Amino acid sequence: MGPDDELMPLIGLANVACGFHGGDPVVIQRTIRLAKQNGLPVGAHPSLPDREGFGRRHIDISPHDLFAQLAYQIGALAGMLSSEGMQLNHVKTQDTCGACVFGVPILIIANTRMENMATAMSIPYIPEFFPDIVYNENGKLMSILTSGGINLDDVQSKVERIITRNEVITKTTVGAIKMSFEGRAFSCCIHSDLPHPVETLQAVRRAIKAATK
Image 1 (cartoon, helix red, strand yellow):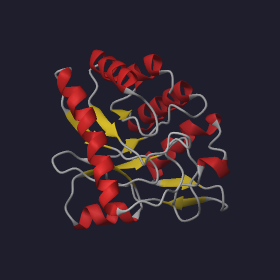
Image 2 (cartoon, helix red, strand yellow):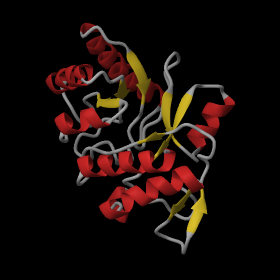
Image 3 (cartoon, helix red, strand yellow):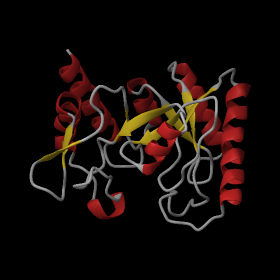
Image 4 (cartoon, one colour):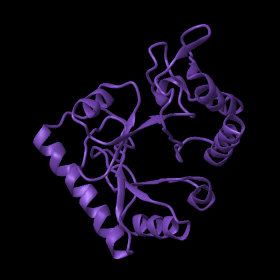
């Protein structure tokens, strides 16, 4: 879906689509092997069955059917990882889809009901920050389809600000708002299907280096 060969040396975790919104067995195997070559832990990136909408559309589905489809995707990726001598490291669901697998941490969008539930249920998780997506005045992510994403020139300052000040500049307010990352380790999620993913990731790495030196 993106320039994986260029991205892999720059990231710390690889989230691999499981076929329902992107990828297929051949692509999944290639991606796993590429991650292995770069010494990266690999997580399952399951979604609702929505290849046409890349897993970003709302789909009505029963809890029973959702569980079955998630278990199928995560199990398939775990099996392919095993065939390469690797283990499932984590689970990161795609956009409108949410689930957890006991035994590995889940990546969760910070400041959401899902984060509150994980905390209440003592489920291990890693909060996520999104350098390439716009936040609104409530600290929630805005739709990529309507907000148009963030300007590449603003990525480095955005990440430096969240690390050093725990705040973001929103698209719907004047000035910055406080977030919930202070004093916590978190993951920065970069989308390989959005414009300029390599340059975005390079800007993130520069920001982390500048903010933590």
